[in-house]
Length: 384
Ligand code: PLP
Image (tube, helix red, strand yellow):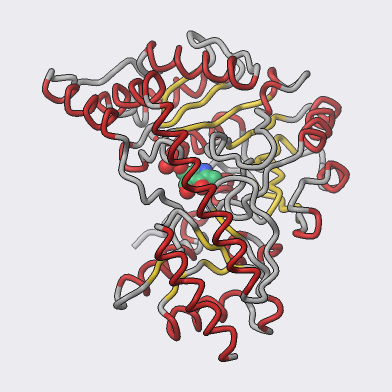
């Protein structure tokens, strides 16, 4: 047989999936493993999906996506964060942030271009850079600094081949929200070295401490910043597969061009449901965010009571405690915890070398289950 694609075959299977697969074969597992809301999509949004089906909205939409949805997205970015992207020329609807990320990197990168990726980071960032022909360049962030990016460290990684910096805030897996000053420093660097910034803001609404800064709203950022957003997390719409890209016009135009040859459009029914989510489901989103916040407080307090050090997660729905005091590496910790107490967490090492010494626990899980998980984690730690 002829060889398959080297880049793809060199990519390891997702470390998250591996644990998920083991856990799914076991009984009585409390999964803190997957980054998925445990809420069902708000009813009025599901109803909009049903209405769309009943009325036969089962066709393609335009490649860029429904105008109404793009308008709502751009208005929302303007009102909430002061970011100014034109819905006609600078916004397109994607099948989730996952496609938005892939499209953006394919549009930005030529073979061999480097993309700086502060880590620990979402597992798809480095593979997607590589799939687009680029080379990811890791820059470590430290939990002692709340995983804030350090513009000086990023500057130290810049070479003549650096094309972009890719980051997420609020962040998966750390729950860190990047401070505005750090982002301003990043924008200055981008201006000095003529770099693009790719900002994954899928968790923007899930910010509990401080306020979310949209990177594209910072002075000097707009012309070089691609903002990615979606509906999977705050609106509990993972299975609907809707996201968006807001980008300066030349980037957005090329992204639509690639999209028209690949995905064509995001599902029509899902786009109509997303319109409803933005137009009328704010109260439901606010209620879910308040619930995550309650769980966050209980869970982080409980983790600290077990003796684990846990930096306060400020956004998303992950706690990222240090497990160094256990004397185990993160993979062994997760494996032993799963087998001994049937609690699934994700080893921090799957998110990059700086994630070692931590495990990721999703608190998008009902409070009674979180409380039971805390009892089991405590028992596990005492058994070591
Ligand atoms: N970006 C981050 C940081 C994520 O955590 C996830 C999902 O876990 C995604 C993107 C993928 O989102 P979507 O469902 O919109 O493709």
